[in-house]
Length: 606
Ligand SMILES: NC(=O)c1ccc[n+]([C@@H]2O[C@H](COP(=O)([O-])OP(=O)(O)OC[C@H]3O[C@@H](n4cnc5c(N)ncnc54)[C@H](O)[C@@H]3O)[C@@H](O)[C@H]2O)c1
Image (cartoon, rainbow, N blue to C red):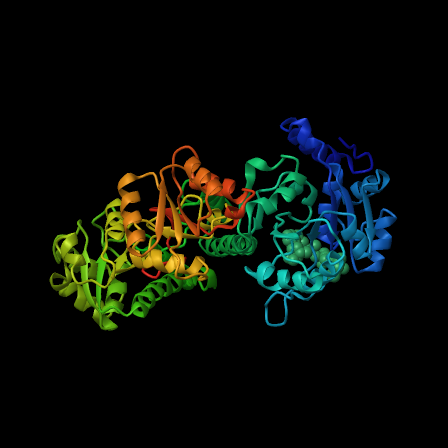
C-alpha cells in the first residue's frame, strides 16, 4: 500500500481508504500480479490512468508526442490540474513505477498492454476527429512488427461504434503485418472519470466495461485491477462498449438540459425547481431506474402524451423556451413512422396486428400508438386484421377518438370501421397474414411467433424474446452465429451454408446437434437429414465436448441451456481443444435468442 505524503491531506485520506477498502476484498495472489503498461496520450485520461495504475504497483511507461509534457512529467510536474495527480506521479517516479517518453518502440517493447488515451476532438462538421487515434495505431503497429510477444491494445478514447474494429485494427494489421486475435488483441475500455474527482472515480468507478471480440481478450485488462472492480465489470462486444460511452455522455447532457428546462418553467410559476427535482430524484422505481429506458415502440396511454402536451403549454404560455421538452412528442411520432416504414418495406399486403391497447394487460386505448400505426399502414395500402383479447367491439374505439388529439381522417376511418378489421381469434388474425406485427409483450405471442407458418414475417415492436445475456455474449463465448428455435429448414440451410466451407461439396457434411429437449432434438435432426446432412446428436454440453474432442464436424448446433455444461461453457471448452475442432463453426440455438439477423423476424430499434 502506498502512502501519499505529498498529496493534500483530504484527497490522500480518501484515496488511501478507497484502495484499502478494495484491498480488503482481494486475495493475495491477485495482488501480486504486476504488469507493465504503456499509456499513449498523457492528458486527463492517460495521466490519471498512469498515476492510478502505478499506485497499485504496475509499471507504467507514458507516451506523448508533446516533448514539453514528457520533460515536465519526468521532473514530477503535472501538465494538468487534478487533485492528487501531481503528488501521485511524483510518488510513482520515486518508486520507479512511472516514466514518460516520446519513444514508442521503447514503450511497446517493454510492456504487454497499451492503453490509448489520445484526444478525439470534434471536427468542424461535428464528427470525432480520428487523426490522433489513427496516427497512434499506425505507430503501435510499426513497433509490433518486430515484437514477438503477444500485445493487448485497449482504446480508452471516445469513438463511434465500429471504429476500433473497422478503422483502427486494419491500420495496426497493415503496419505490423500481424493479425488481430492471433498476434495482438484489441479492446475498448471506456473511461468514466469526472475531471476534479478523477482519482477517486478511478478507484470507485460507476462501472467497468471492457469490449472485445473474444472474452479471453479482456483478461489481461481486467487482471490489471486485481479483482477490485469484478463485481461491477461488464464484458461485451467492441461496438457496444464504444456506444455505451457515447450514450452515457448524451444521457448526462439530457439530464442537465431536462433539469434546466424544468427549472425555467418552475421559475415562472413561483415553484422551487430544486425542491421539485429533489423529490423527483427520490423515485428510484420509475424516475431514476431502468424503467422506460429500453428502446421499443412509442409511448401512449392516458397520461404521458397528455401531460407532455400540458407542460409544453405551461412553458409556452409563460414564454419559456423548452426545446428538449418540445421535441418529445415529435420524437414519439417518428417512432410510429419508423415502425410503419419497417412494415411497409417487408412488402406483404396482409398484415396481422397483435395487440391494440397502449400496453398489455389493459383495455385502455387512450392515445395508443398502435392506432396511428395501423392508420399509416392502411394508407400504404395494407389489409389489416387486429387481435386484442381486451377489445371486444367498436365502442372503445369511439372512446379513443374522443381523446385523440387532432386525429386524421385515416385514424377516424379505422376507428369507425373497426368491425371490418377486428379478428376474434388468433387463428382468424393469422389466416392469410404475410406480416405479423407484435405490439404487446405476451407469452401467448411468443408461442404464436414460434409456431408461425414458414412464409410469415414478424415485426416485433417490443422485443418479445429477451436474451438475458444479449447477443454479444454468444460471440464472446466463441460462437459464430445464432438461430432462433424452432429452426426452420430454410433458416438452417442458409445458416449452415454461410458457415460451412463449400470444399468437397459432393461429400455429406457432418453436423453435431447438441439439444437436450428430445422432441426438439428429433425435429431438428429430421430437418437436417432431409437437407442432406449427416447428424450426430447429444443432449448435454459435456457430451458435445466429448464428441467434438473425438470427431471432426463441419458445424455444431449448440443449444444454450443444457444440463451438465450449458452451451456457453461447452463452446469455451471446444474452442480450447488441441485439435481442429477448436475452429469448428458453432451456431447457438435458443428459443429466447434475439433473432435480429433472421430474414423472417425484424425488431424495432434492434
Ligand atoms: N477528459 C475527460 O474527462 C474524459 C473522460 C472520459 C473519456 N475521455 C476521452 O478520452 C480521450 C482523451 O481525453 P483527454 O481529455 O485525456 O485528452 P487530452 O487532450 O487532455 O490529452 C490527449 C493527449 O494525447 C497526446 N497525443 C496526441 N497524439 C498522440 C500520439 N500520436 N501519441 C501519443 N500521444 C498523443 C496529446 O499530446 C495530449 O497530451 C478523448 O477521446 C476523450 O473524449 C475524456
